[in-house]
Image (cartoon, rainbow, N blue to C red; front, side, top):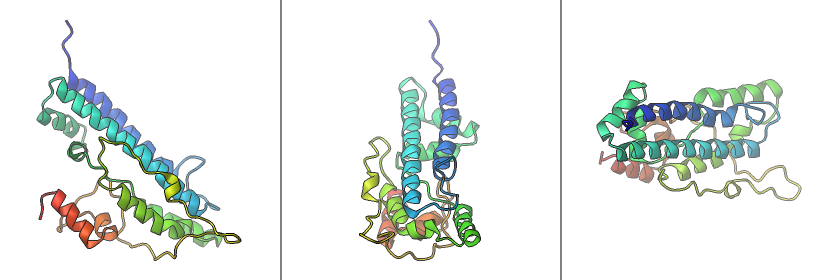
Length: 215
């Protein structure tokens, strides 16, 4: 008989998880389809944002399943979380245990890079144009249960071009300087992350606080 070591198995899965998170973020910025290049369109920015979050959701969902399977094999909850802490990923363990998806949102440096490219090339900033739709996607993806499927469809977010026009995207406000990468983030004194405070309505903020048992 071979003694099962679900803690060791979980450690291997955490390594895959860390790599998967990084790869998912690079779906937006890196590779031949990455959006931090001149001549990219708002449509391409929206597409890559969807792809990055679909990939990230799958990575998070898979890791959560591994956590639950480890518990079925006899690893108690505390030891599961301790395994994450040993890898310096304690916050990830607590986040995954809750099972509510926290989407990727382009960090401030990424947003600034878009502005730099636009300034250097004299071309329109595709992120600025796509931002209203990206904000909507972020809100829609937030708090999606990881135990389900990522049922969102890309075509529901792509702008519909009118005949003879370049784009049908809505007017875009300047991005808030407080918008930063929400995964992982520390909550502010109000109990919300900077991204949540910047993007969620007051009603949605109250709902998020209730989910965290803070109101």
